[in-house]
Image (tube, rainbow, N blue to C red; front, side, top):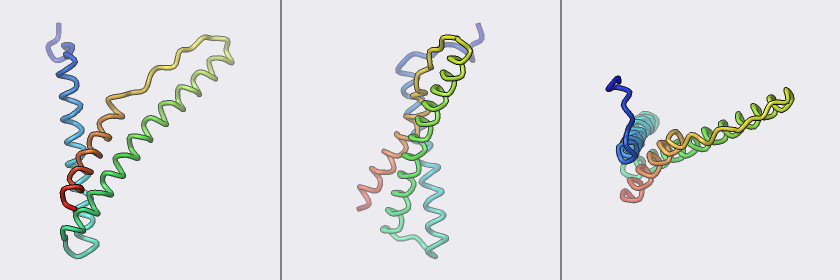
Length: 116
């Protein structure tokens, strides 16, 4: 058995998803702070709060886009297979890919709350 492909326990997988969510918050927060600082010629506390709020909004939209596209893809696949007379059970939503940006948005929203 390849140790790199060993199955993960549920707590380890949840911790990995949470870690990726915090990393997504860090990347999105850093990018929005840089853009805000460049556009405004500096960075104030209110400007940082606004920039991080935009980062949280972007991550929230990203999460919704993943869910929306997966649901649409399953519907289209089902319709195509129905035309061929085949049965098809659409796969569920990719919850880790949906939860990672949501966790990042939550982290950025908590930072905005503390800054305000």
